[in-house]
Amino acid sequence: MKPNATSAATGAMPLLRAVDVHKSYDRLEVLKGISMDVEQGEVLALIGASGSGKTTFLRCINLLEEFQQGEIDLDGEPIGYRMTGGRRRKIPEAALSAQRARIGMVFQSFNLFPHMTAEQNVMLGLTKVRGKPAAEARDIARHWLERVGLAERRGHYPFQLSGGQQQRVAIARAVAMEPRLVLFDEVTSALDPELVAEVLGVMQDLARSGMTMIVVSHEMLFVREVASRVVFMDGGHVVAQGPPQELFRDPESERLRSFLGRFHGVFS
Image (tube, rainbow, N blue to C red; front, side, top):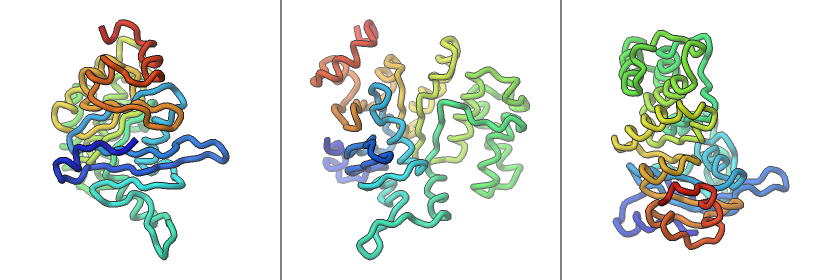
């Protein structure tokens, strides 16, 4: 499946471009030539069954996983690797860290530091990675905690927060760094059902603000309402992609029809 044609039509460079990305664990090939573009301000949803390669692809974008073949570019700059003397080489750790700082990621688990308050968790990357003074970092942290509805909880430790509140702190921490792109990996899967809506509401607000996002999710109602484009992955391949209304209304692939059949009633 080729990258989408939007960039070619407008002449603009996509924010993110993946070309023929392959990833294997020993003999198990998880990504089998993934290619796609993500435009500035786009909300791209990755859907598919467990094991289809969605999370692995996100982790390759964020340099948490090495990939053996292909290229991923952010703002036209190759991520993680350079061709030197005809050979593909990993870039130095300092350059890797600088690239990683331009990509935010929110995980299934909240990954908050338990000995830090919500405010301190959000401030940490701003002071340690961005080098901002503590006072400025505090103002930014408070702004984003207010944005995700947690202004009154900024002094609370993770154990004093619900799962939904902890995930909203994790989102605030990611977007406070002003990344070019934010990746969301099944961020509601560890939450009780009644807490899912509050996290999805925050993500919907970020999407409306124009933030560029790649979202792995099984929340199909959310995907239908928020995503500008959906990519269906199966067995390490991109099988289908398009606007959610088109893809869900008339799926061309039998595998996609079978997958969507699990969500009976969502698309009526």
